[in-house]
Image (tube, rainbow, N blue to C red; front, side):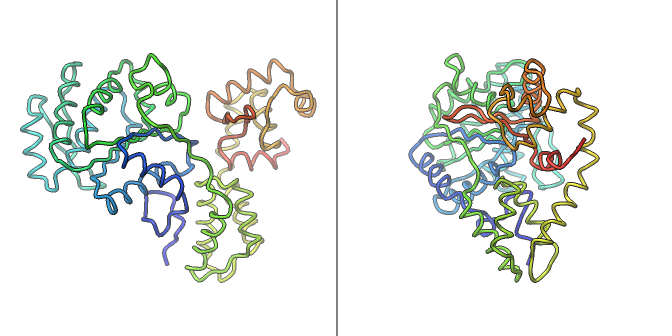
Amino acid sequence: MDNPFHLQNYHGPETFCDRDDELARLVESAQNNRSIMLHSMRRLGKTGLIHHLQHHLSIKHKYLCIYIDILDTTSDSAFVSQFISTCINRLYSNQTNILKKVTQFFGRYRPKFSIDTLTGNPIIELDIKTQQEIDLSLEATFNLLNASKKKIHIAIDEFQQIGAYETTRIDATIRKHLASSKNIRMLFSGSQRHLLLQLFNDPKKPMYRLVDQMELYEIPYPAYSEFITKMFRKGKMKIDERVVHLILQWTRSHTFYTHYLCNRLFSLDKKTIDENDLLQVQYRILKEMEMNFLSYRNILSPNQYKVLKAIAKETTIQSVLSKDFTTKYGLANSTARQSLNYLVDTELVYEKLSEEGKEYFVYDLFLSRWLEVRKS
């Protein structure tokens, strides 16, 4: 049996863990003519859930599903080229039709064609420069999508990236076409929460209150525990319930880190996985990453590194200004606050919001676990 704890790409529902409630909500939104914005911490399984949703929509509800990751785009014109290229590839099944449609609808933008070496799909680059060209080319794309008469679901991942463009009208243009498209539903997702929320919650922004909003959290312990045990059993391997508990405790049920640790344990190919195996794999993971982690002592100021390490040792904190915290780690209030702000801005520390207030923890769980046991 292949290792079922996949770290990249979507491999079908058989090796996808839970998310039944989240899937039901996403399907309900699409089926009832509502688009949605999905956000979460990095590596919590957001992209996998999107692919799981689109697999479900395409099989059970006959949607044509389109997935676009725009993290590498830097401008409206780059966004439009990627959007058009991906949509055309999904709309038309062979390269002859693709070339014909691109020439027919986008010939004025002097299209250049190349082949994606990973997928074999044509890549279309358009010479789009002016705002008018951006608007017209997107209009032509939405006209093609609407003309297909199919139910279409478009997921744009890392959508907060448009906020980094020097200037953008992508949000305004999408709003206009989404409002007039009867058969198109869209999902906007991202991991930089504050940037993404600004696009949808700022009354001055074009997409204000345009979509439902949903945050992704950790997979519940019972479902994750059952999934891990089941996957090892399918691989004809036994893993004790206590070991599974220790795995989820160490990874805090964070999807990527849990899958990574289980992937390494599964690769041992032993009939029984015990606590000693877990300890050895945990040690090897942190040892392999140690050189990267050591570099933070040079990158950060002494106070920033001190605060980072202190937060890791506490696992989570509510405030760096509490007397117990500053006294325990020898921190001054002013430098502790400045250091925390920097660590949050650089995403070394994550600021989690809840009804109880704010909570801070080291974003990279492996870094956090490594710092926990460091004496210096």
